[in-house]
Every structure is written in C-alpha cells, then in structure tokens.
Amino acid sequence: EMFGQLTSGLENAWNKLKGEEVLTKENIVEPMKDIRRALLEADVSLPVVRRFVQSVSEEAVGVGLIRGVKPDQQLVKIVRDELVKLMGGEVSELVFGKSSPTVILLAGLQGVGKTTVCAKLANYLKKQQGKSCMLVAGDVYRPAAIEQLVILGEQVGVPVYAEGTDVKPSEIARKGLQEAKRQNVDVLIVDTAGRLQIDKGMMDELKDVKKVLNPTEVLLVVDAMTGQEAAALVTTFNVEIGITGAILTKLDGDSRGGAALSVKEVSGKPIKLVGRGERMDDLEPFYPDRMAGRILGMGDVLSFVEKAQEVMRQEDAEDLQKKIMSAKFDFNDFLKQTRAVARMGSMTRVLGMIPGMGKVTPAQIREAEKSLTIMEAMIEVMSPEEREKPELLAESAVRRKRIAQESGKTEQQVSQLVAQLFQMRVRMKNLMGAMEGGSIPALSN
Ligand code: GDP
Image (tube, rainbow, N blue to C red; front, side):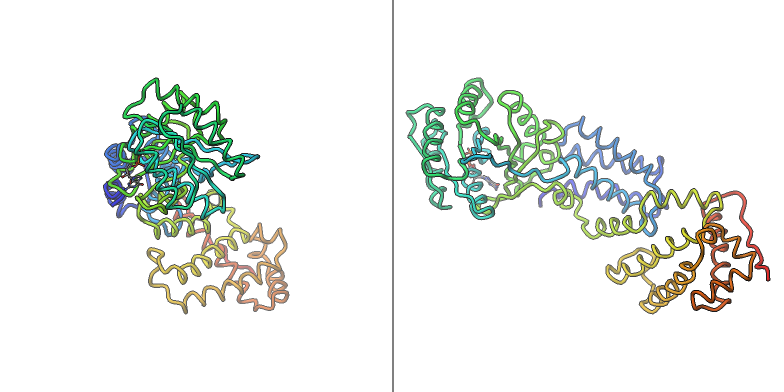
C-alpha cells in the first residue's frame, strides 16, 4: 500500500503518548525519534527531516490544552499541518498563458513515464477543463517513443505532431508550435528526449527547445520510486534550464513517500500533478492536504481536532487562562465558555467521537442547551459593568432583582447564576494549579 510503511512508522509516535495529559518537552522526545526514523526510512532527505522535526517539536511544546483533545491526537494534527506546509501548502495549479496556445514543455529521464504523462495531461485538460490540446513528439532518439505517443494520442483523441527522427528537436518544436497556432489549440504539450542520466547534450537540447517555445510551464517528470533522488533531480533541472514545477509519477507503486515530501522543500519548486497508475485517467492535481491525510491515514482524528480547535481557539484559551489566573473571569468569559461547551455538545451529537464525553446522552445535551438559553437571557440584560464585575451583583440584591425582572427569570435563578460564576472561578483557579484558591462570597441581601 502507498506510504504504508511511513504510516505505520508514525503510528509508533502516537502510541507513545497514550495516557499522557499534555504534550511536554520531555514526553515528546521519544515520539519525535519515531517520527524522525519514519521519515528517514521513507527516504526523505536528512536536512528536510531535521527541519521538520524541529518545527513539529516547537509547535508541540507550545500548543497548550484543547478541551477534549488528547496529546497524541494533537500531535497527529501538528504533524499533519507541518506535512502540508512541507509539501507546499496549497495546491499548485497549472498556469495558462494569456494568448493561445499555452505551451507546456515536459522533461525527464528515460522511463519515468514522460510519454505517458503527455497523453494523460492532454486527456486531463480536455476532460476536466475543456481545453483543446495538441502533442508534439520531440523524443527523436527513440522511434518507439514517437510511435507510442501517436498511439496514446489516438487513444485520448488528441492530435500528435511528429516529424520522425531526422529533424532537430528545436526544429520540431518550432513547427509544432506553428501548427498549433494554425489549428488554434488551447494547449500545446511538448515531449522531449529522455536519457538514462543527466548529460550536457540533454540539457543543451532542452535549452534550445525552451528558447524556441517560450513555454508557460516547464515541468520535470520524476518517478516517485526514486525517493529523495527525485528532489535532487528537480533541483538540478531547475538550476540548468529553469522549470516551473514537477510531475510525480508512479505514486501507485510501492513508493515510500520521500519524493512527495522532499521535492518542494529541496528544490523550491512545487509538485503540480501526480500519476497514480497506467491508465489515461490516472493523473490528478497534487493536493498537499489530501496527501498528508493519506500518509497519516487518520481522517477522523484530524477532523475532530480541527473542530475542537474551532471551538476553543488558541488565543481564546490563552486569554481565558490569563483571566482565570488573575481572578478576572467575568460574565463575558462565562458566556463564551458555556457557549463553547454547548457547541461541543452539538458536535458530540454530530460526530459522536469526543473522547471522555461518550456517555453524554442527548437528553443531557438538550438540558445543557436549555440552561444556556436561560443564562444567556440573564447575562444579556446585565450592564457592561455588571458583566465585568460580578461582585456588583453579589453585593446588590437590587441589581439581581432588576436582572430577574428584565430577563423574565426568577431572582433565585439570578442568584444561582452569580454563585455559579464564583464557583467556576474557584474551580478553574484550582484546575490551573494556582497556589491560592479564591473564595465564594456570600450573597448579601
Ligand atoms: P518515458 O520513457 O519517460 O517516456 O516513460 P513511459 O511513458 O514510456 O513510461 C514507462 C513505463 O512506466 C510504462 O510502462 C508506463 O506504463 C509506466 N508508467 C507511467 N506512469 C505510471 C504511473 O503513474 N504508474 C504506474 N504504475 N506506471 C506508470
């Protein structure tokens, strides 16, 4: 299975955090070693692995608590985000020129799947984007390659411009471009000769072809099976001829992941498309987030942590923590907090997977939501000053009475709310490990 080894290597890391309460500098040491090992075994280059492990560690130690999320789940999420970043973040779309035809020049070593990619790409652009395409057979050293391209072109219903093997590649390119303009096609895809190894002849020829075509995209086709070597190749071709991105083939095979993870970081150039099979339909855009998801194989955990983070944003949590420490937790915070919990409640219903909340029944959730509505009504009629200084309400029965009247609740309900806030202050303060507990004032009459 694709990336199977990497996936199971990373699982060791999560497993070491089972039973922990938070991520700490100490308890991530062993998991980080597993992550490092898994990436190296996947053939990611050492400098990339080092930087990756460094950023994940920094993130992990600074992340803080998210309600209901366990440390191993948090680490999965951090690793996911860093993997996405590593692979370039956003999907890197093909660029189309302002005038037709847009020229896409393909380069690559022999056997990587370049000829196949030509036809797959034409097929993709035709089917997915409604573009008309033409192929140019520029691999003049292998008559079989020209033949192959003609056959594949026929298969996907795209014309192929070929001149045989006696004409210089740059000349074929020039004529092919002319023909594409004459036929008014949207995209011209040019195949070039691959060699077994990089040599000067190959590079010079590519430079000539590139000069003639002035292409919008120059894409290097690399084989995923070659791991970090693929990333090195992208760098070399970029330095030599200047490329706009890479196409990674044979991701369906027994690929370890190193190429997908290294290309962007090593070369600065994005992977734009990936091939995952021999059929003409097996070419698709490279989505870093989906790729990371596949590598981790934990879609459910990832979406859970994301939802939980949404509810308890980091800054909210920090803000709240500061307030609790200084005993300033007020009705505004109370409302925010209670709403967050209520929202977590609705999520439980939807996702049914909040750890430790599994036993919450729908009836309990309805009850919590009902009492939230009552509390909201009372807090809404408080003055800003009363919200910020709950002491005002503790000290004045007159104020509590007014709030009861304006919100249509009983005085007893208002007293309960005020008491609840002070209880919460104390509980939270204790929870945060503060040395001194606050006190619950008795409500005056
Ligand atoms: P070229 O020498 O770079 O033009 O390579 P070809 O296009 O002739 O492909 C070499 C071999 O790799 C052929 O047998 C293709 O069918 C196969 N191939 C190309 N792309 C893929 C892919 O994404 N997955 C798999 N499994 N095989 C591929």
